[in-house]
Image (cartoon, rainbow over all chains, first blue to last red; front, top):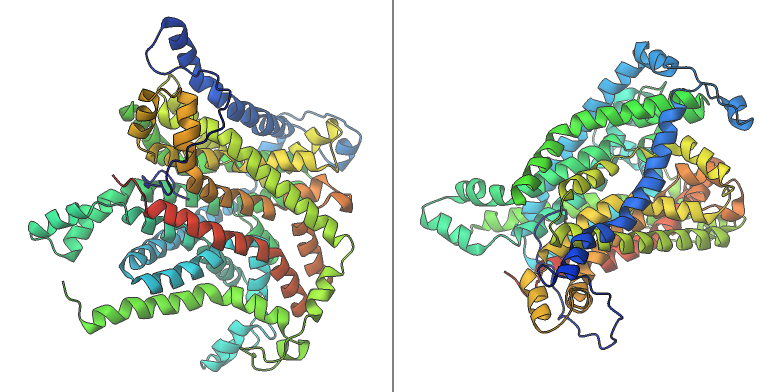
Length: 332
Length: 276
């Protein structure tokens, strides 16, 4: 998957389809007046299904969720279809409690650590892929693709097994390496060690996306640019900073944006590994909302937290969103 | 430019170590699944299983309604991916190729939609689905999975559409094609690798989805594999052989699909026939 990188994906010749499809004229630019008018409507018609789907299936639950966040909604109200408005009580309860702010802080730090690791290692591995010979490159790609493809729930189970207190292979290796106190170490007993396992899991699964796409993007850099740079007397580092990096910059921004969203919203990894434990200490915002809302069945409070979660995510990504808005403006 | 021996060795050595690191968890899952229990709980790990047993797999498949769950998962995943691809293709074409008022707004809308906190909207979705009498049905699952992956599908496909040289489309239109024909005959075949690459994300998301199906479908006949895997884990917590066998079965289709599609996708991305 390339994310707004300009890949030249044009394998295979344009096959000529003999079957003539009944083609409603979509109208190009210019032409006679009626077809021009139809042409003006074309983009909106093409976007219509996507917009309708988003509006109904995302917009509606969001509005509903917004309404729930102003209600007192517990199992009793849910089952009996009761609607009890309670104003901003849910928000007041969440925002004045100390829990929420701790969780926000934890989520931000967690996201930052993971995204920095993913982008840094992913970029390095992507550049390594570009430097390898064909056979080694295929081998490393295969490893990356396997890690990338592991379904999250299966991966989480496997990590629990790798880090299992008894018979877990990680503890055995650490013990063998001379770290004997780790022989029966319980990885899921403290906040830091649980987070370490979760981080390893997320970074392991996320690097391939960055590395493979980055490698694909480097293959589209015109060779002449490097030749020109070396004619100007640029060394390896200089040609990296003056050719490679500027070329990859849009890709790196777009990928960082996606990774921030994905890590911040990471749910199954954290939930399945230890359900936010020990003692709620690894709850990030989505987990906190789920545990409060669904787990403790304070559905209204959960809805309020989830609304605040989106706000926090918007603030974190606002820089990039503003940049996109500006860029698209320049393009047109 | 000649490279020193060291300069030739370290990239390969690093790649070898990285390969081992990335593959090991996957390998360990399969290895554990095939090992007899005695080897799994050995004091020092058995790195390469000598005795192989299929017993753990038999235990994993033995669950009630296993094949119904498989069928449900496949149905929901494939339908959701196809649905989102079709919808996204129209939108991506408009966003990549046409100029119109509000284009920017649409792009940002889809970027924002990408942030939707699905896991925590389950209660709202539950109430909406319940009020429409659609609990215990595969239809809501399919459409919600499709919409979960729609924004990224649109944004990714937009990049692929934009990468097809405009001249190809124009020359087809000069040759007498309408815009629709030009799209169907020229652009669509060139988009095939892009479509495959994009569908991967949809496959893995829909195959994995867990909180929504947990809340919406209480009827086991209408559940999907992630529920089976997580319940299996609870029931057989310490039986790592059976748990790993179940994980292997769950992961295998996606692993195969990825290896198959990813090669196509990446080669489509890199060996462009019409390179600029």
